Image 1: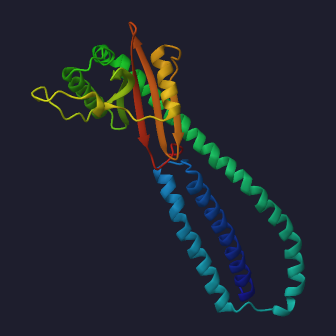
Image 2: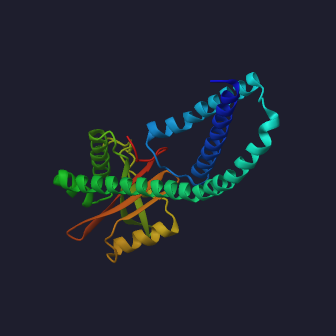
Image 3: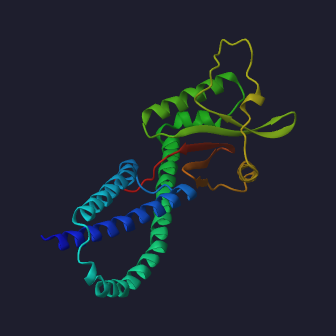
Length: 264
């Protein structure tokens, strides 16, 4: 391979590397700005590390150009005309590819969210069906320390059974000072049956948004039996109602995840 061919090859490598780097920056900015979760951890880390390889290609192409000094300048006029003609099509193709990449990224984020939704719903069904006695305990809510401690033990056992089990709590409707309130109970309750101080309802109030309160009130009034799922910026939430003999609780799942669900 003569110097002219090496220079031409290095130019091609350099241009391709620059285009790939632009794509990488575009994808990275889109993912970060919109909080998209597309690929699983291994693929995501591989994608991020690929920029090192791209920069290495660019550096190698630059060194080759410096070594062989871009000879035959006198013949560049005709070549430039050809490149310019073909470059228009390449430019339009590059611009057209950006919306396609956006669709792929948002589509991947949507698929990741749907896979997470399916997993959370299956977890809720599993909680209810795997052990009926535990499910019956959860739905038979009474604001007593025995119920709170046992609920924490049940949730702790469930979380240890499955390493992928997300954060989970039980939501119930109660009243404080004659005002309806949503209380939440988790596996982290640290009280014991030997405590001399009884638990206070105010410490178990579940903080909610207006949209969540509207949904929860409908569920506890019996006008809505559907579950509610939401995902945003890597945070996934599921409210799953469970009713038995006119008694009702809501199993609430939440999980924050840095990566998506697509890939291996």
